Length: 227
Image (cartoon, rainbow, N blue to C red):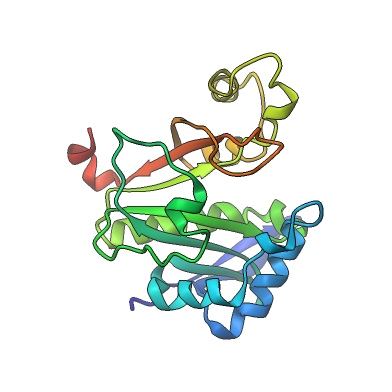
């Protein structure tokens, strides 16, 4: 395992605060589950939160893709990835299938696509830009492992408000043009992710009408291969 450890500062109301991104470990499991509970309160089902079996698989099957962020020594968020084979000519998939419902037992050590299983940040700390720092750290993993891309399906939680007026593709285009804002899509765009299409029945998610926006970040050192 290659250990990831990055120290830096984030700013809370103009004041620099020490931060650390590192690989999460078994001792962190209770904190990670607690963060999931804060990020996905009812009506989300508790079955959708991480369980210890899933987290155990993350730190044993692909520990390089298991990252957390600390503020003043306390875990405030996490991000998890899995290596997969991805064929851009056949992009349709569900979150459950490509992540093995979060258990990542289908992790392929030779896969060239780093797929985002989850990213979670405690709601009270989201204004500090922790999610974007986690995303940048996962880009580091892509470059270090000489992978082709980081890929993931983003929720489109604002779509249910516009579903009677436009298709999900039109909604995505409106967000890209700045005509609409979406809390997830706009965040991913700010992180440098590029939309490559809409996936139907991606995840059981009423707000997104079960759609997901497939968004990637290409390894800039592999652009010749990925054209």
